Amino acid sequence: MANFSEDAIREAAYYIWKNGDKKYDCGVDNWNAAINQLRAQNAAAVLKHGQMFGTSKSSQANIIRAASLLRKTSVR
Image 1 (cartoon, helix red, strand yellow):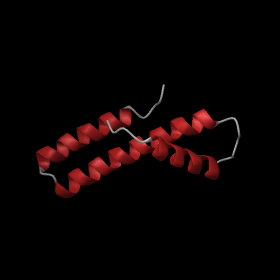
Image 2 (tube, helix red, strand yellow):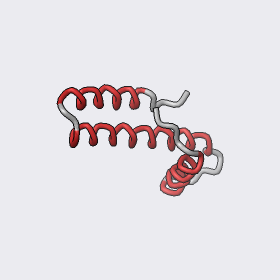
Image 3 (cartoon, rainbow, N blue to C red):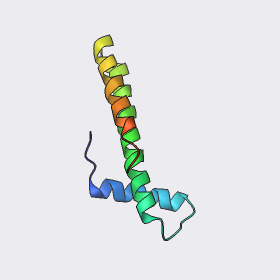
């Protein structure tokens, strides 16, 4: 799983807040949504990379890895 920098999460959370309803009390929700968004983007990049550069075996491994990343997108 990719470790995202605090700055990357903060920036994503800011844009979620900016493009949302701008509630002042939803910082934790925006932070968690930002982590989920970054994980989903990472999974999409894994799939794209596997489809562009991988053989069928590596593509299959990338699909499994991406599915694993997407399963982890719900922050508890």
